[in-house]
Image 1 (cartoon, one colour):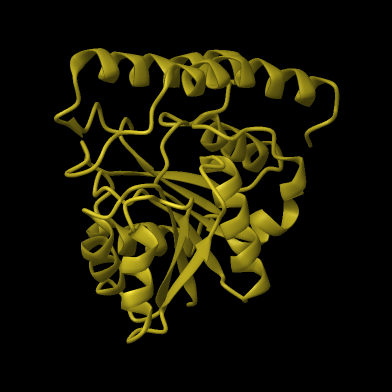
Image 2 (cartoon, rainbow, N blue to C red; image 1 turned 30 degrees about the vertical axis):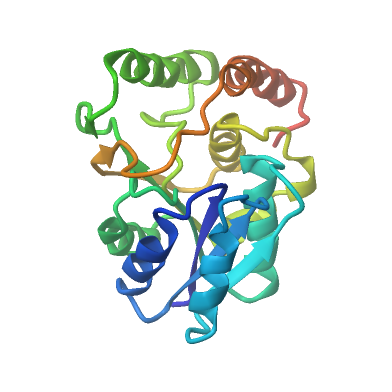
Length: 238
């Protein structure tokens, strides 16, 4: 098993060293790729220091804040070029628990996409404001009613792809760059008929740093769902 955990970062200096150690402690077959968007707080410098003594840590530095979706696409391209079988996404802020990584990898042995789900067994979110919780929960319902994609947490960002899924998707055709990127990747995987499984996780509000959520990101997600469904009906996604 050769696995790569991809973590996009922007101003995560409070978390990144602890996160790298926590991820690598889960399994000796896991490597980690940090994709940093020129964080002014020096996040990339911390990663470089870790890299001096650990070759399981990789870093891609980008010129500026270029977006979540493009960061993951860059990470997917790296993973495919370097022979990884399992490619995982997660946040740098400990809202995703590194201790759940072995569970996602185990489920990926018999599934093509595994999603760490906040909603598969009720609502498992800690320390979120009630308004944000409502927005997230009803966004999941909104995605389902428009696309009929049978996923309870389509906007979640803690997941594991098998290599063959990413090889089947033309990554240059990805439309989304904000949080709708997660919906789009799920949608393209589902349309192709791959096996998708949700495993329950507990999502905890970040322990340090600042959330990257914005109104622009929310509106992109609202309209992207309709665009994806239209493209499917037109045969442009299959």
